[in-house]
Length: 115
Length: 113
Image (cartoon, rainbow over all chains, first blue to last red; front, side, top):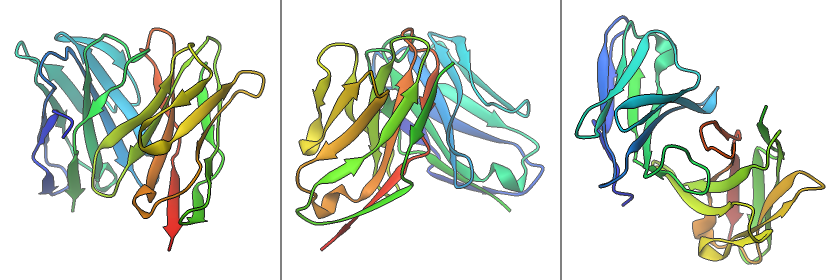
């Protein structure tokens, strides 16, 4: 158990809908990272927050947004969902603003299926 | 700019034989390098990391990797494969600040009995 909790574990929704994925980082970790893992694109970094502020942005679509709350949990919002958004979404946390010299601890992921 | 290339998408070995998973990287800086493992339906777990200390890095479960700057490689090895090693392995490069982290495409390791 990494200490990172993601909910829900599975989500099935229809195209055009909006969903929210939730992540609770390890106790004391200030950084939260979101990743998307799909068969065709592999594992892609989406966005990182550190202590409530956006720190780095990867290949995140404009339809997607995220935030980190004062209690350090984070939510990833996916809107106007398309079939191609079906993927495993991982959250990871680490104590530092960057990942140099430190590992990130991954949650078990949320499997999103868009039908 | 940074990039990472895992040279094999699939590797198949017999139990008890050596494992070699290859990773080449490109970085403008002195990078941090990681290997993560993902078992089916699980999150990623760190195997080992290189952060400019010793070039031979030992990780968990008997894995190790050697940083070779001249070859821009960070190959993952294990002397003797176990059935439980069957998983997907990701090579990861990070810039010194750790703000840009790039994952390789992954290598799926199959272990035959």
